[in-house]
Length: 118
Ligand SMILES: Cc1cc2nc3c(=O)[nH]c(=O)nc-3n(C[C@H](O)[C@H](O)[C@H](O)COP(=O)(O)OP(=O)(O)OC[C@H]3O[C@@H](n4cnc5c(N)ncnc54)[C@H](O)[C@@H]3O)c2cc1C
Image 1 (spheres, rainbow, N blue to C red):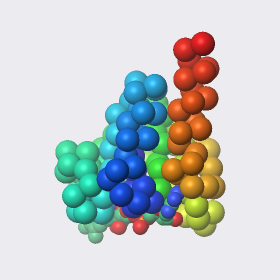
Image 2: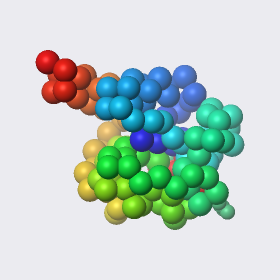
Image 3: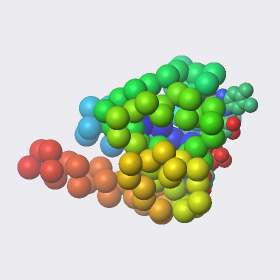
């Protein structure tokens, strides 16, 4: 999964780390997140970063620029969470959630935990 500018600050990436831990995944980022110094360059997904192709990719607060899509569009299942229903990421997403990533991600973590570990 990756976080974009919609994560609003480096302090909020812990909610992505929590979800990644439950699902056995890793946390990436969009380029502006890296440019802002919120995450290390090694985390950058896209044309000028890494190309990833996981079974499940969560795009969290990411608009879906062509440069970002270049690094993740071959993922098997793409879930996008964005407050803007017109965001381009929804054009490539298998599942879309229109809403605040800071509220949605903790709910997903809680529900996946219940499903997988109880
Ligand atoms: C030569 C070149 C190479 C590039 N290489 C890369 C690359 O490798 N990787 C890359 O990612 N980009 C790359 N870019 C940058 C790219 O063009 C975009 O600017 C970048 O991908 C946008 O990042 P973003 O989606 O995080 O930010 P934004 O485009 O600003 O999108 C933020 C999104 O967050 C949403 N949002 C805001 N608040 C919330 C909230 N509370 N909850 C949910 N959603 C919210 C907004 O609706 C918006 O859609 C490159 C650009 C150039 C010119």
